[in-house]
Image (cartoon, rainbow, N blue to C red):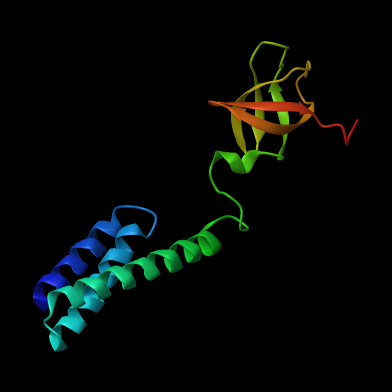
Length: 141
């Protein structure tokens, strides 16, 4: 029985290499630890219960660890991290028309309820699909 647990663990860890999020890592480590238990105790339901508990605890621990160490300054690293960032208008933004804003070295399509000319500093207030919703930076004006 222990060979099956070790095999499941190794397969899950290999899958984890190609996927993000430490999900399969939890299953893999849990299976390997259960394999060690199966060397001493061959009662399937005990092994299965151990596997479920250990995998759950690992999943909680690894998800917290990944959020703490792999996110940017403890913040979200996806597009929502742009909210409250300052950018510079690259292409004029008119009400009801898209323009272009450079935020953090990348250019984004942007909309605003205000007219914003090229070179104006703006703050990202939100995200609508693939467009940033911006406002003029009132702190500078």
